[in-house]
Image (tube, rainbow, N blue to C red; front, side, top):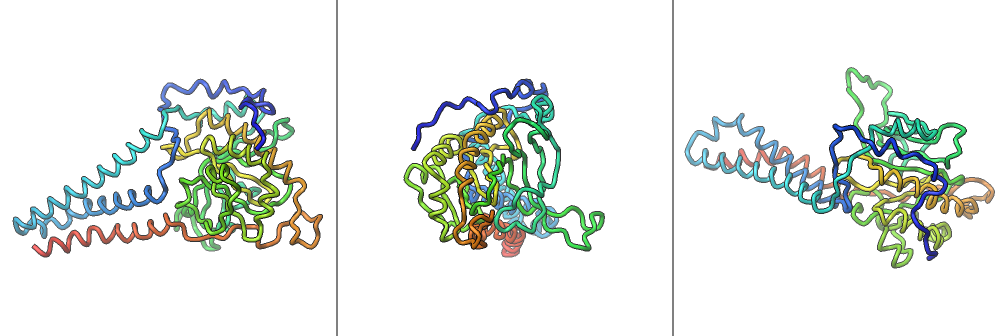
Length: 366
């Protein structure tokens, strides 16, 4: 692979980061994680906490039954103690992981409007993000982008969109906000920076190894790009588009992905004519840090530009008109699956009801 240069910004060399370097006195540090807890472990811990919490909440309502005899009283105290122990253990598990794999940094989210004003950019609290393509399985969902940052119209900066993206359940014709309440969030992608590529490409996802259990993409579509690249990412692409991935991810593109994205715990996904880069995890979802903002601009000007240059010559040979800016239907999205975390969450919902029920049934035996 081509040797990479240093991490100094060039296209964004004139950015003024001063507004991000003076956080308010009330700002509290948050742990920026160097390694995320596996999503399936997170989900199991949350499910255990919910089951224990529901048991604790319901025990007082059945105190008459549990205090009917000394044996039942002892049993009730034991169940309460066990539930408290599980809750404490879950909290300690998250704290221990965050302390071991996290660094304390000050979030700079509140300073982004001032940063945008100082650098000829536009900052928006919330937008629909209708121009950004949706990932596989969420094409019909409605997007919401908060903390949106992008170049102002007529700006000389390279094009990009930075923000926090989530998806809402499709709006039904008879949905009433006052009657039905807000629609549920069906997916939260977290912080991202997206770069337009100029041409539509096959859907290609570069997943970090620690996020595989939380992905809804079919891991059977994984394709090996070589030992060094495979250590950094698991590449997924639609069946039959492996050669297209090899064409797009040249040694220069792969080197940029490894050095600029993987080295700082970023993930990536090509969707239609955009490439999305996902921010690294933090102990507080949505927290954005100055070092990650700097890294985002480096990725835009180097990795995004490298892939956009290669994308300019791409043509899907399965489309009849080779000049058309199209990708054949099979290549537009990677196959999906039910993520392991979703399966665990379903079991967790059952456990939320089953845990207190089993506890009460056990008390009836005494």
